[in-house]
Image (cartoon, rainbow, N blue to C red; front, side, top):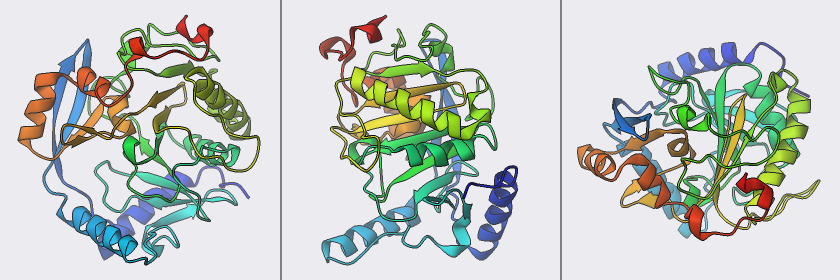
Length: 312
């Protein structure tokens, strides 16, 4: 079973309207500013309140400590469920969304967020990304910004900001070739692997899944990380952020979730940040977004590459 072509956006918007009316969807109001750094206008949302999300997180953590099951995806809230994607994945709205139409692509049965992505994960991702222009991402572990242990990829519509390129970091990507092989983005001061995809590959989701699953494995290998098996599950050898658009993919190993007290997930490496207050905004402006990202990842100059070809 695959997602019926041409229905996802319609189902997404209809479910959003319904979930807002009944209170199941709880958007987080924000303001926004740009921070210019290294020819990039990084987009920063300043959150007005995360009280309800924080309360839900504390309740869940307490239930886990008490040995109670605390998994919002087994089953997902009916009012937030958008549609089936494949036999193995379902599309669900992000309950406490900061970005409009933020979609979660969740495994039907429990898989750990610390396991490597599978071909089935990529099939579900590309079935969704073929429906509308979007950024897919995966927070591989708590240090990469994951807040739920049940495996889920995420999808947000493009553009990420109201002005500028669809993804704020794209001006820096122009200097990287990486056509169908891992390479580096010269301006990135942290360890990473970047791949540029074939034009219009997204139009054939199953073919895109096979090719990008292979490239994902090559990206991990180039960074000295374990790669997924052809079938089955394997624990990841370290936390990482993974991002994909219709044109490219980026993988960044992580060392910690926080820059000072500011949490970074995969969207930060796309150039889209979230801060809780003006004090955090001021610190991000002071240090600079690229430098802040570097401090939550591995230093590129001090780590060995698993594949000499990646340096080119």
